[in-house]
Length: 134
View 1 (tube, helix red, strand yellow):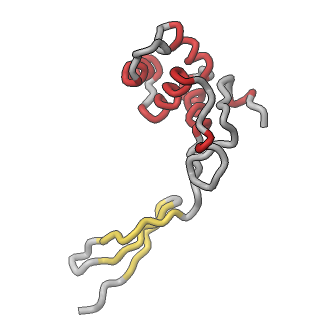
View 2 (cartoon, rainbow, N blue to C red):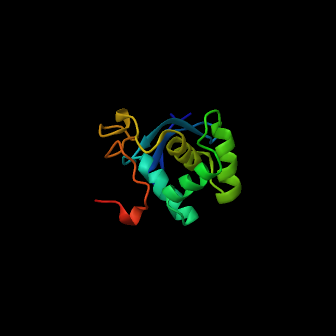
View 3 (cartoon, rainbow, N blue to C red):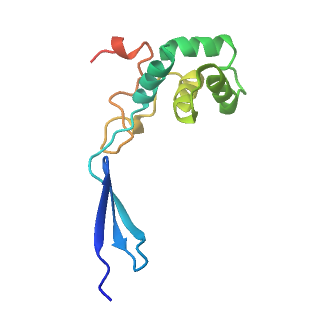
C-alpha cells in the first residue's frame, strides 16, 4: 500500500493541511492562515453603520431613550432589541452593548500590539466612518 500523501487545500485566506486516508477521506492536520486578519472593535461599529444606515451614536441615543443604559439591564435584552429593530447578530450587537453600557472607551489591552484584536485608539468613534479622523 502506498504511503499517505500530504495535501494542501486552500480557500480564500486559509489553507487546510492534511493527508488523504486509504478510504479517500481528507484528514486535517492543521489550518494555516495565509495572511493576518485584524478584528477591530471599531470595525464592528463601522459595519453596524453600513448594515443599519445609522451611526453608532444614533443607535446609542435610541437605546438610552428606551432605558437600555439603566443599571440592571442585561446584554440579552439589548441584543433582542437590536435584532428586532436592526436585524443585528450577537457579534455586532455586543459591540454596541459595550458602548451603550460603558461608553466609547475600550481597555488599553485592545490597543496596538501584535494580536488580531487590536485597535489604533482606546476611544471608539461613534459619529460615522465618513467623519472619522484619519
